[in-house]
Length: 302
Image (tube, rainbow, N blue to C red; front, side):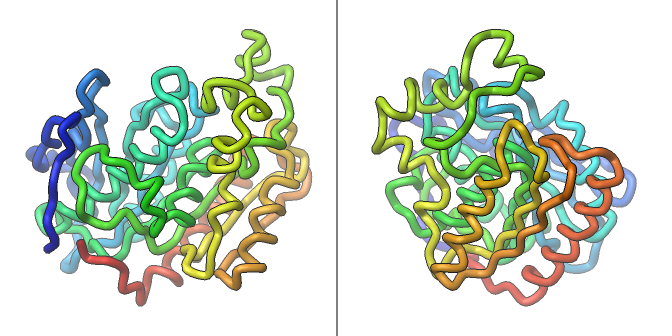
């Protein structure tokens, strides 16, 4: 185990709390995985199945335009938790700071801190530190993708929570995820952001993309793809009015140019939020993808 430190603007994260029994496993609720002074503590719930060996862990990250939502109320996350635990995966569901609390890259720093906490405490909670993946929808899919493509990017690591363990993951699944922050359309009419006359991606950058070109480029996931990027599956409706399908197509092209592993599943007629049948089918496909790419993974242990 490598050295672990906490930055001066941080309070120490918590050790794993006592677990409560659940159907088929146990749950560690309200783990404090980061405490940046001046911000609220960041919490995470961790569901671990009963199994003889350490479980691979999937971080399920909620969406909401980077500006709303919660790991506690995330319905897709609750559905995926049930499916994944039944397949023998542990599931971590972290919070992250929203865009009116802190601008990019704070959200990336937060989910990386959650990965580092999991890796550091893996033996304490019965998970495999070498088999960690991420799964998210919409802005959660964006953060899952950023974890996949920035595992070795020091400038995006941040100093939130524990510093020292690797934040690299071994695979990712992204549903309806934005890619290029500079090319996103205004929020559709049915969006709560439209009613506010606001664009949450402006909040993410603390201004319009054209006014912050370097930050917008840094926030674009396709700019970080390399041969070492983690295997990724992108699922996207071709009728998505919030995040056009050209967004994941840009990411697929970047992966293919780099020679990294990518799978793309365009869904005919699907919009930004999947219906129950699509969600079920794509959950099954995502689980198959993770079983394949985590089966022999030998990721970082610390």
